Amino acid sequence: MVLLKKCLLIICFLFPVAANAGQEVKKWQLNADKSTIKFSVAIEGSPAGGQFTNFTAAIAFDPEKIAQSRVMVRIDLNYIEADYSDVAENLKKKDWFDIENFPAAHFVSRNFKHLGGKAYQVTGEFSLRDITRTEVLYFTLEEYDELQAVIKGKMEINRLNYGVGQGAWSSIASVSGQVFLDILITATPE
Image (cartoon, rainbow, N blue to C red; front, top):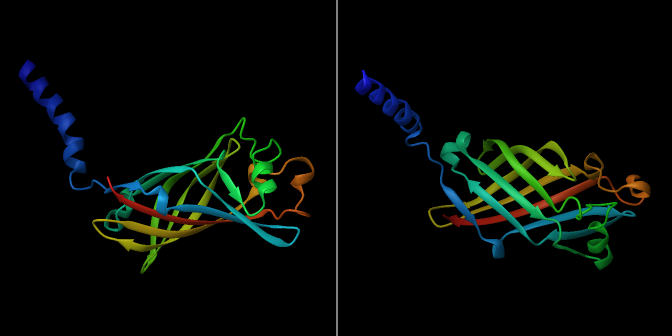
């Protein structure tokens, strides 16, 4: 009886491994020097932009195993460059990102979808200022081989949905509600 229990225990532990055998998704290491997350928004009708210069990503992606693919991105909001230096500094303040209380934004994928050719979308949970909402990143798989993966993507968010721009800044009279993210990710195998 003891032997039977041990065999059943071993089978229970081995079965999940066997069920997932061959489903391991390739893991990728972000190449920060060749990756960017840029933003653009209209300020008083004129385009203004910048970029987040410090972010990390945990990436498991394989176009042949799209259902098992996943990504998790963390953007450090302390590191912002902008077309105008006052914009970069003001974004860190309480009315905007409030980095003292909310130092990072996060994106965690829920599912990937192949749209045809090199086009994909990833739906996930985007968190900013302690508010989490579902957002979609549309991207093209520019390069994918055993040495490197490169994606170019776009995401559009409404800053007001995340409480970005408090008080007088909650109006879209000066700063548009729509913010556009342009993403370039270059990664190498782990």
